[in-house]
Length: 260
Image (cartoon, rainbow, N blue to C red; front, side, top):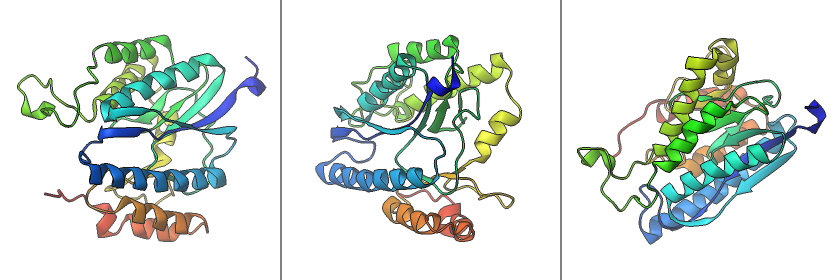
């Protein structure tokens, strides 16, 4: 496989959900979700165009479904199909991700990479996702009843965990990543370097470097994600990393508070 034939894709998803999206399960909530994710999509694209090194195309996947479980399951398969359709590196990010500095991932990492506890940023290198990882995804898809949604009983309210589970998608990706760690042996600097490029809200922002991908929690109830994204972009576009660190380490963004 010649390196020059490999395409570098940033993949986003923005689906039309007609009934419910997590806690937004009424018409007003869905309208606000649609509006905020449209704004966050634009911010994500602007930041990627400025900072994502070597990207050949930004792809926005979309479809119309009743609720989030249809969306997550459908897009899981869509990523699989795109990866196998041509030689490509895929960086997937949620719409509530901001690139805040030069981000050089394509061709730099050679194994499936993500944070263990958060699937909102994932990297699929060409030739670097072995079949046994895809088998875990396939099995998860086969066992996934996507018709169970936010209007149904939630899994934590049932004895067998069979109800609605918001993070079912994340559990499948986490199992794939853990399988790679357990069986393919790359537990060293490569994954640590990828992880060091990511900062998630409600964690301490590092003092020794600036992560260049910030996941700022678009579904959160504690802060207005549009305001968060717009403030981050106002700093990022002028390369004001000191203000980004100060913002992320402020009480508002550093500590998670349970919202009733």
